[in-house]
Image (cartoon, rainbow over all chains, first blue to last red; front, side, top):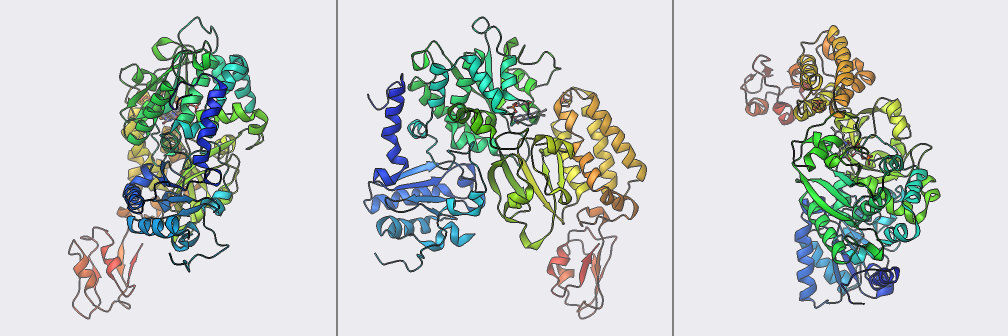
Length: 126
Length: 505
Ligand SMILES: Cc1cc2nc3c(=O)[nH]c(=O)nc-3n(C[C@H](O)[C@H](O)[C@H](O)COP(=O)(O)O)c2cc1C
Ligand code: SF4
């Protein structure tokens, strides 16, 4: 079945699901996933700049396999911009009140180096 | 790369590990903040369109309605009408007459943004649910009525509809069945009254959005004179999980008469503003009122139901929040805005705020609402300006009852609620304004007086320099005085005083 084709049966629906699931679940997909909240609340807090900074830094570091994804509101408007990082074999990290500068450091230290930056996470800001 | 010394094992690192998250049950918001809302594939990966497939191939339209009916789902747009019943009323003559399904994304309550978040974060969940509703009642066309002030929601919904069309999940012969369904977005100009169902439908028809009397109800004669159902965004967002997981699963969540969850937009005087989804019947205390109130202030009340609702006073903080309990304490669920107020909030002022909103938003079609709400506001103004009398309280109650009974639509019928509710729980505060010319919360300007305590004043002149009205007199190193005639009650002096010498009463 081609990637963008009509979905006319349950099998076709399931095929799309199975093809896409690894994107949502890095544990099984093997690719890091970085999610930026870009709903109205996120954008108002400057999330677009954070998204752009991550995008640029990923390119600069040649991290082509990292999936950078825009998402909706996760409910913690107070803590926007929110960035969530899921790496294979590591539990998810929620970064809050991010800035473009912090985002660059996150790419270098967490995505490249494998170490989450605890002081930027939701646990540190509660 | 260096090892990060900040990385401590065992500390909370993800949202899922926080209390804030643990207290929630995410059904409506299941995909918000998780998937890319612009990707139909990610929606499908989370079982998207599986409910539509199940309904079309495995269920009759009547059994879909029966499922929604027995799940106990009630409308999330405010009134809590049973969704299955609404669908049933519109289900006659399938295939013989043109019918419509509509979605209400007008979301006009000040402080509410639940529907916006769902459309921005998970638009396909509404598209899929509307297709299921259309199958259930026998409609082939749907409209989503979104306010134009929600550009991101409009964009994401537009992309979702386009993608669903490209994949054959909207359009003709969906999943190779006889069912065909088409969906369109209609932009609303943002008038609050256009959220009322009859006004919304006339607005979709391209006419001026004004309510008209019911009956006939939309299920009989709605959009373009055809049988129509209208549901709220959040109502629709519950449909697919119910179809997939079954009625028992859904009915096990929530309270006896209000099943499932409710999304609340927390705002006002709290630390954690944002969106939470909790089972119906959760109390304000359990909700933790958004992490508590800043600066150690005391919780006074929470407003639900926006301009149509009322308040939950601190004494009722343990009331399980569901449709019926809120009605019995004199407020209503409304769309889910929850505004927290602390001891610095004046309840008369709050009532005035919501009434000003309804006065502005009244469409003017009927006199009880158009004129009545204005008169009511004048009475409140008298009180906050220190000109009120005890008789005014009775007049407020009479007028409020008259407006509720004689207004044509829900806007007028509910407009007096914030006044009645604050009067019910905070009558003392109204009386204090009237009898002692005092605003206990220190909000109503006309009733405030600023005073300098000569014993504490060091004569530093900071206040005199800050006063924009030149109302503070006194010479250096001698206690100053405020000329109450000139004072404009801005509070600027109080902020500047380093010796705590200025008080307000
Ligand atoms: C003045 C007024 C404004 C309303 N605004 C909205 C709104 O913004 N969103 C909404 O879903 N319902 C709104 N309603 C309620 C709708 O008329 C209608 O009851 C609701 O959309 C039905 O959907 P539900 O059964 O899924 O709750 C409003 C009602 C009134 C009287
Ligand atoms: S009650 Fe108010 S908003 Fe409703 S029709 Fe009458 S004037 Fe218009």
